[in-house]
Length: 329
Image 1 (cartoon, helix red, strand yellow):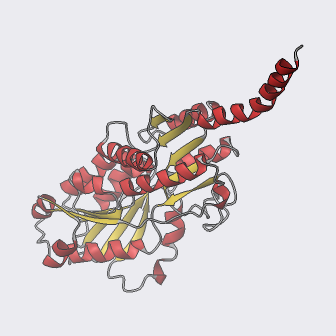
Image 2 (cartoon, helix red, strand yellow; image 1 turned 30 degrees about the horizontal axis):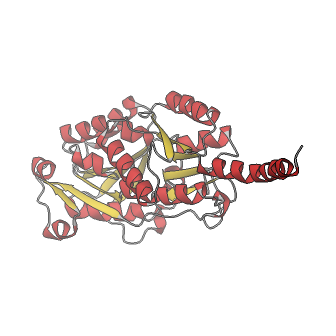
Image 3 (cartoon, one colour; image 1 turned 180 degrees about the vertical axis):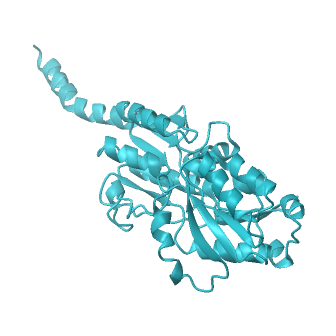
């Protein structure tokens, strides 16, 4: 072998690991996104996905060019969530974006290595998803939805909209939203609560119907619906029953008010998905999810439905109209 050929061969061998690493770093990244409560063409799903895409594109990630996104929409079906989680984990993506506690819990059972960024999850510490908010400590981090204090805000807004209400039920599913059962034990710590609030745990559609019909027998009663996979999937039933029984009701997500509910107050869920893109970007660039602090929502929305208010015989006070982010005529 000639000396020049031997040197070229050595140079090629030395250069190969560097070239291989560069090629690996330049490959198209794969992420999975699992939305739990809504279907693919639900307006809320579309808003969240659009915001997530925008967030990624602002950071240089374009689906189909340098990243490939596999979306799954469970529509509130627990069996479908388990199936989709198994499929996503088996496909070994670079990262999974998880929407809802049910999805995160299932992912935690299935993988301890794939990085997981959750969006719209409440109380991740007590649910066992992270060690603490500042240093999650594992392969999971993300963006929370609400804190205990929001219950007082719901009560105050409902009272302002419907002054006659002095007692209300908080509707939730203890399986899909276990933290509410814990929070309800601490209601005495809420300052200035002007409405007596009781827990209304339900597990199925029959439970929703029984709870709302019984509550409607009280002339000064109101309803608060906490958003989780179960209540979002059954929102048409809840909104319809509140309308039938002329029951003043407060909801957590904008989509409830947009679909006929009286009013809603809670975090802007599309904005949470947009912000989740920043952690996707950082993790794909090498950041450790164990060291990325869990972040809380920064943007909240108050939405009023004037048509529903009129149907209930309620006059929306100017104070609410002045601070509303959206008024549906």
